[in-house]
Each structure stands twice: as structure tokens, then as C-alpha cells.
Amino acid sequence: MPSSAPLNRRLLLAGLAALPLALAAGRHPALAQSADDQAGHGNPDAAGLWRTIDDETGKPRSLVRIFERDGRWYGRIEKLFREPGEDPDPVCHECTDTRAGQKITGMEILTGLVRDGLAYEGGEILDPKNGEIYDAKMTLSPDGNTLEVRGFIGLSLFGRSQTWIREG
Image (cartoon, rainbow, N blue to C red; front, side):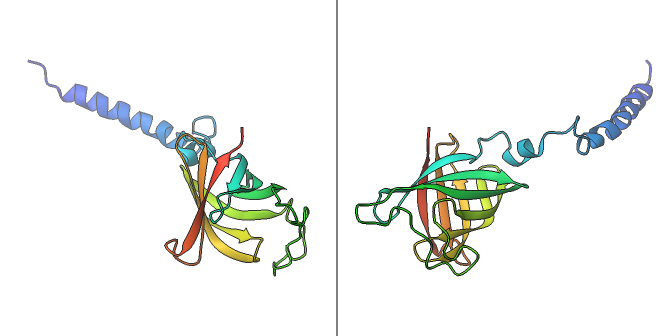
């Protein structure tokens, strides 16, 4: 009966020969997944237009466009829904950073979030009503239609959340 040693040796050598190709796949663009595929794990992303809902009144407050720039995620107010008697084009009087005195429409309120699948963390969110800047995280629903946005100080346990709805 022939020995299985030569067969095992050939399988081992074939596996070792394939190892450099497998390792190169992690570094070579033609062989690797895109960075977005790796970060998103095949999930939808938060890019697009979102209707913000005030967590206190339940009413729509604005449309925010979320986008990626240099591997981080940001959000800019595109439109405000104003009540009768409210300033139709307000500025951020309470802001104390570079956004002080700027129009709220067009302002970046979400900055620097890093994506990991459906979660986005490590960024900040500005509340233009009071000028306060909070730590931020977001969680996208698996179907990609709702986004839970949480602003907090220190621990996410101490903060508030809003559910934003994707615009068609």
C-alpha cells in the first residue's frame, strides 16, 4: 500500500505556495475588497438626505445631507422647517467655535464620524439651538431607512437620541 506522505507533502507545498497570493490580496487593490466594502461589510451606508425629527416635539426640523470625506462621515443642514413667526434663515448666535454667527442652513453639524458596519462613532454633533457640541454616534437600520443619532457627553448613557428618516 502506497504511503500518503507524498500526497500530504504536495498539499502542504501547494498551500504554502498560495500563501503569498492570499497575503497580497490584503494589500493589492486589484485583489482586495474596497475600503468601503471592508468598513461596511456589505451593509447600506448613511450617505444621503435625512429628515431630522425633533425628539421633544416629534416634528420635522431639518434636512441633513450626510456624506463621506477622507474616510470620515459628516452632516450638513440643507433645509430648515420653520414654524410661523420663526426666523426663516437663522444664524447660530450661540455657537462659540468657527460657526459663530454663520447661517444654520449650510452648516456642518456632524463631523468626523468613523464607520464600522452600521455604526458610526467617534465624531461630534452641534446643536445649533444652544451652540453646544456633543460627542456623537449614529446607528443605521439594516434596511438603511432610519438613522438613530445620539449626542452625549462622555458616556453615551448620558445623552439624547433622535431618529432620522431617509428622504426618497
